[in-house]
Length: 452
Image (tube, rainbow, N blue to C red; front, side):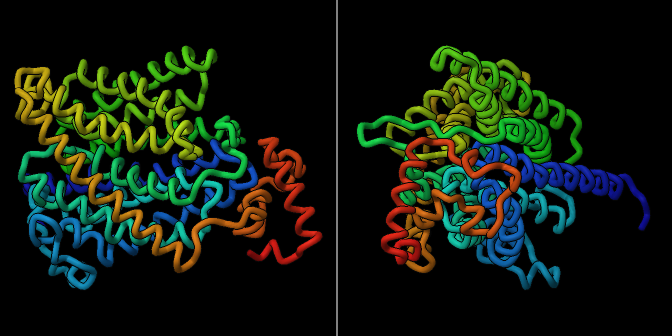
């Protein structure tokens, strides 16, 4: 092959796309550490296993069905071509991806790591009480059907893209879709035993390894430099540099405002809130990282950090148990970031071709963004709830009370992450020890209770 300028450009673009995809893949490690660190030691193996296997499930589901539904040529609502046989024999054609010149395999792999991220978001919100097979089944449904169908509307040439809806790297496509699915899962599962008292008191279930959670947060921050700049899907120096800087500024602003909000509301600077503030800023800037100024990025990320702290407490008041704050980070700030583009988009000092409300562009872009947020939520909420109910009918969804109290590591996987810890160290909520004693007494009287 003659190394013409065009060939060299395609090769350089391909290397860039794949390197950033590898960074996004490494975000699986970040999610695994954040989620396991924020939860209890007795469930560590279970959470790590979910975060490990979810990418394998996503890879198969997205290859077989999801990629075609999302990017295949079809209509305004769904792709109808490009499923596994066409990918295998090389006959697949995707007009929605013609804008990037990299090979089809690179296009697929880059989009795959985004699909896997959306599925991973669900893991944290349902942690510490979901059956392992139920999570595996939902991950398959998520990446083969729910994520691709809604994603087609935005990135696959569907009706929202026709309206002018803008979501550069996935505040809605990845984070809100994952967040809506996580919300239905957490609500249907119900809270962990001992989390809420009858009088409405919230019992804090403390994280077992903040070191792991902090390392995970930093891995995610690093991975986002693949997530957002990589979505150029071309080695465009000006675009990459702009997006990398807006991404980092939003993360930094979210970290600081979450720190201040935590300090004000909790009287102490909570590290967990700081980490979630960083992630909230990253989620929020993802939609408009290409089309906002540096000042806009600071505002979007800063507001995200303000949102995330009180929203964690608000979900607890609603008795929606989210062990890691996934709903506050991904759902609420996915929505905020998507709407923020309609406010902060600017042709001055960014890559945007339109102006948002705050830059003299009127309200039309904001209304389009709001329409997209509402449409995705209106689909994913009932569709994911229906999927959860179907899975619950087939395999069951929640582990038994005894298994939950003893820890999912033993019941679901037959071993613990920390064999050197005494059993007493695994109990972090007084109510759990009381309930466990009651259950143990009942088991002695009625051995069959463990098998319900």
